[in-house]
Image 1 (cartoon, rainbow, N blue to C red):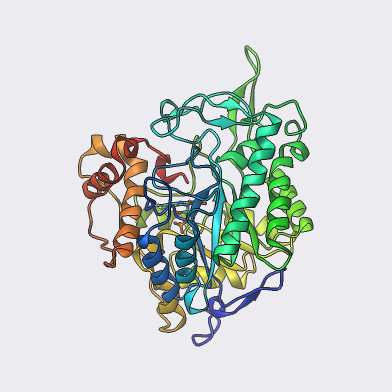
Image 2: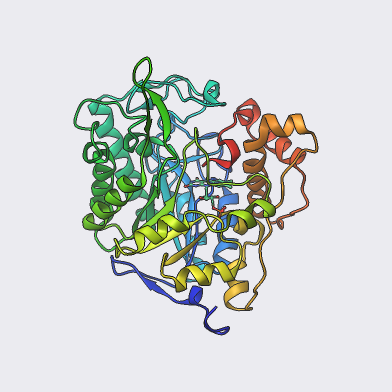
Length: 430
Ligand SMILES: Cc1cc2nc3c(=O)[nH]c(=O)nc-3n(C[C@H](O)[C@H](O)[C@H](O)COP(=O)(O)O)c2cc1C
């Protein structure tokens, strides 16, 4: 920290669209797993976001909100495809924007990453099942027609329009973590031969069309952010009897896409990484692993630093104000993306800015105490544990770091039925 009384995290930031956010805390998206059966937001969303807004962050990004009710990324997603839930969306937005906070809706379509327990008919840029340990939990997707692609572009724009009408103060397009936009970007997942496939200029076309349509829907003075992978962690793909090539969305392509988004008028890029087949963004064994890893994607952010002027929110691994101040000092990021620590310490920004708290948020090692169960449900345990904490806050209770993995598992089953047992994000893939 440069100065105890004026940490860099406390400084306001003006975005390219002209909007100023009050400080550098960017609460990254976490699916709240709170929506009712009809994918509508609930009172829990309202209470959770009021608590976070009181907690002092500059920007709160919501959990991913789907553009199509029939295509969910996980049980408990909110979906916004028309104005039927406008009244509840207004209450959610009002709570999230209290205390001078910005609240942005994250907009998403899962593509083939839609569990078979809730969706037997997923769509993707190309056919082909998800590989890896959890491939069996996802149905074979149908290749999207060009008309269907255009429809999804319109859906992203429509969800953004409704979000603005409801009072949210920005939107983030989810182009990371192996969901539909990321599937288009990836040479491993996108094998189309039309204008949406081929080299990166064509694979990125879907993202650019979504971005332009969203921008048009919300106007030039409204924050539009994009969450993008630094890379997908390339996977081996067999092209013939013997050849193996490594495919996926890589760092050079990612930087190229960022530059194009900058030219098109993006307000912020939220940097992340990994896909369902190659998860990298979360740890299962908590603080020990966190300390070893430090802030995720730091090297990539260093690489990006001199290439772009658009504000960056580096997300993953920030646990202490020392790391946050160092990243801002080094100018590798302009916002500090924080997710899991805010499910445990919802007023972390206030503690740091107002109370000059200099500690570290230690994440727990979530375990059922039974190795076999941990192994079978590793990813879902961690995710459910954090969802459980958010649901506690949503019910007006305090987070409880002592809750065990078994309760997290029961929470998942009780809340969502058998669908909860679908390992949605192995080792915390989001
Ligand atoms: C319960 C849970 C839900 C998440 N949901 C989303 C999501 O909806 N969209 C998204 O982009 N990332 C999601 N993430 C990933 C986080 O935004 C973030 O990238 C990741 O947790 C790393 O940041 P952290 O180390 O600060 O937790 C989720 C993470 C957790 C733990």
